[in-house]
Length: 621
Image (cartoon, rainbow, N blue to C red; front, side, top):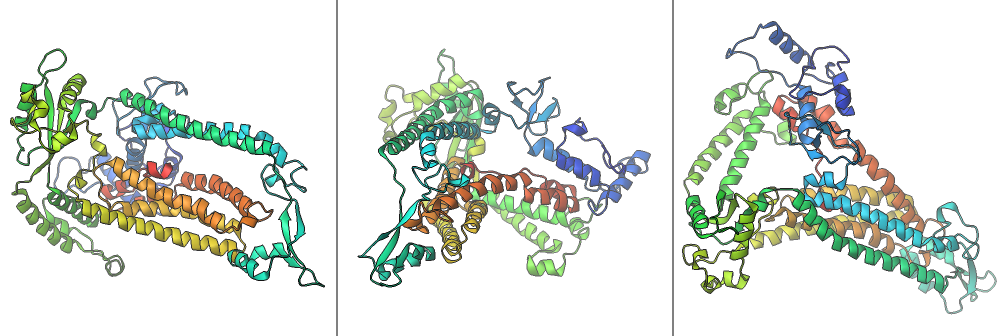
């Protein structure tokens, strides 16, 4: 599919038809020949023609570099960033089991996952992802059944027995449309001023007689709820409580089921938490396990892999920083010239100058400055490589899962005996003592991808301080949201605007929290997600429920008009419309792929903009 016929749509590594591509990619293919959309279109077209005609054939050193190819980046986006499954001739039926394809799979025919994928399919991205969609379905069913239980109450609230002049939006709610004025001799204006401070609308419920200022009245809700409605409400609440408990109980068995469906490295490995600081030799660990442990068939275990994690955070951080600087200088290299990490002088000579306004506003650095920083960091890395680092953890991978389970079983002892190094824990099997004197603390490790390797050596003090800062930021966001909502509801009498502010804050603040969460140190991804989840829950509970309740006086809870029930109704409506639309549009991703990506200086920089949208399970929950 070449809309404009410029010849820039050469085949990629993946054999695919135009109807198997995303709409975004099809639009890009139609526009990629236009220079206003793709500034590299002309240069790429000329390069392709020269390659086809053989003008630049051979391995000449002066052969120009290939200009950034937009279609190559789109192919990477669809085959690496987005999830795909191996078709194997599958019809794509909802009941077909799908096997997730590896990113960039070329050996088998693959397709993008359809909208009707099941939680079993999505569990290929991790047990937590599968459980999320499982819970989502279960909670939808629970809410539906609870709604069915509440139908008698809904019919009662919609009847004339509860209130007059019912409206469609409130027909089945507890909004009380029947009110009457009653005498209140003990009431006075000073008492009612407290309500006015909370909401100016509350004064409408207080009045005095025109001819007698001592004759005072209050507006009273005249709706009555009987014992029957209370019992039905109680039944619905009890059902929800029991159902939620049942879902939590079932979740454990589903988690085991999903975990057993996937064979991962952790199923064959053990993690040693207290290795001696000088136990760097992997051969020593391999011999220890293969000589002293047997499986259930009395056959010596076989160790496949040993991973020794050392306290080298400083070295790792320097290597990461050096890599980032190399990417920066590569992005400055002029289009058409090649970048060689081993020739920094040549890279500086081939780099474009940095505009003064970028230096002033974004503190951008030129190629010479970056090169000097790289040279300094390289020398520091060489010095750090000479050091000997203490061993922090050791990961041992066995050939068979049965061997892993047997070793875990015989080495698992009470934590108190591990902390005190009580060698009597293995009195009957002294060969289980490492170096004949150390009681090893072992456990089944998490998946390698869930271990935050750069945080393994974080101190407790640093972790606590970092979390205090992120909690402070969360409370500041809560304060801003509360002030905005209070201003809209109380001062300006605009509940609809308040609901949209709450919805927008629910969309803006979680990514902000996620950004600051990057500075928190956590040993595992589970710990990181738990901390992230708690902060988001705290913000959204306060923002959605507590703020709304606090800005609504008790007298306005069931009142007809722009009060609590109508505000909650509009909040739900905003969440059901605004949030899905924003997620579907993926504004940030669209800007990157259609605006910033085509204007990237080189292929690496262009590919950087073609990434899938990140998500956090904590945010989804």
